[in-house]
Image (cartoon, rainbow, N blue to C red; front, side):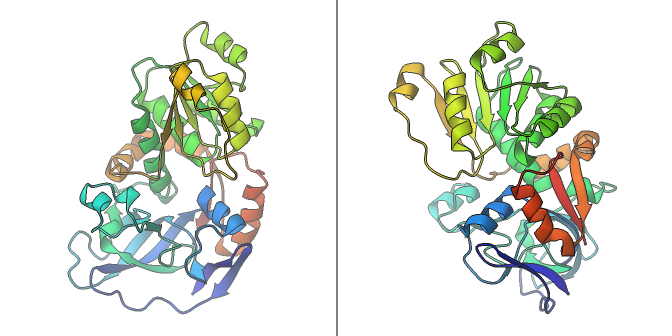
Length: 335
């Protein structure tokens, strides 16, 4: 079968590989229908930060069909259309015992801890698999995992009705956060992105307003209303520093971008201005809610898909995404 495998930092190959063996107890075999390229896939390719096995089939966002089941699997059946929880947790550590699987002491992810979905076939633990609503298009279903991440960010912010929200970074997570807010939040949404075309695209679809990281400009847009909540989905230290200088006292900032480098700042900035930096890692229990929310947001999501490619196009797509040469949120791989 065809598969895209990551060997080491900067080395990604499209290859013919042997198909997976029959599923072990508790696992399922899946035919991949469509997969999505995540920003973390690009980060791992560029830095090698999460390479724990080599080679490994990349990818953790996908829609598939169950083709075989190992012994003891009861939550799904052969023929079910599914999406997967990307988190590979132990289930035994203190965090897992508290239901905080996303903070597992040995947490890994599909495509890193085990072979991922940039392939024609994949085997995964059945506990990670969720059935999708009948009739949900695969390009929408494939967004379930990043949709859950975006929903987790919003849940962590604990927004009040009518509260203005600033989203810095209109990539997949920032853009999907704007989609969710457009659907369920009553209040102004502002978006910022160095890619002007992408920011404008997200703004048009979600009825958000394009802004710049300038306190006076934002004040003008909000007409005197105080900005109290922001999301940093860039992973850019420079963007975060600008954001800290831009928000007023008392603001909450949710951090979800994967950063390169370290931030240096005076902690008194947080103390004296009562700013809150809220870390948001993957998602906790939002996957079922995200799947349920997808049909209502399908039209907005569909408008923000960048393009569809094949497995053979993946290396070129990595280069294009890394160079920020995209106008939509997500590049999808149709298998």
